[in-house]
Amino acid sequence: MSEPRSDDFPSDHPFAALYDRLHAAAARLMAGERQSHTLQPTALVHETFLRLDRAPGLEAANLFAVAVRAMRQVLIDHARVANAQKRRAPGIRVTTDCVCEDSRVAVIELDDVIRRLERLDERKARVVELRVFGTLTVPEIARQLGVAESTVNADWRTARAWLARELDIGKN
Image 1 (tube, one colour):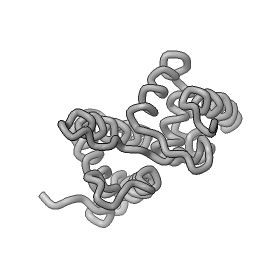
Image 2: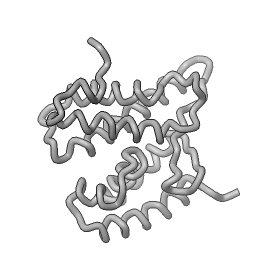
Image 3: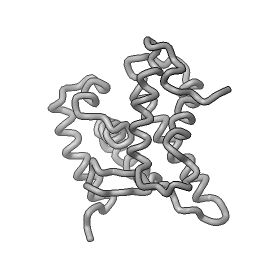
Image 4: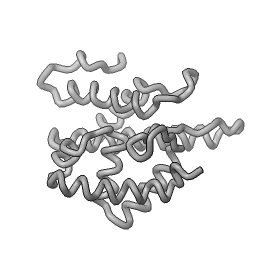
């Protein structure tokens, strides 16, 4: 089977717009990775689509949020495999400039922090996931979560400060 592209889907298919959006998010997340890195943005999106294809009962309304979660998991799984290899390859680092300008964080460390946040406040964790991994704007996140933009803004301010502290970003 050939690898999917946005024009492989009918224009009214939910995956058509999703592909381009995920690819842009993946490219931003992976910005700064070395060119020889084994997981490129296109491969990340393709692996995400494979996981979505196996996911039962996807609804168009929350398709992007589910895709972002799948993409996050692909990055984490890839980083764990790379870290487990005998030669201890450097872990995947993702761009988190929405948290602190010019920040790059190890994806496994970021995932651990988001999981801790999930235990404290599930919605704030979803806001972080959609903002960092999905590169969504506040209005887009509000639509995905079905809450007011003011709620997303408040959640993001709190979560961003918490993330910066937990990841020790910008302190040198």
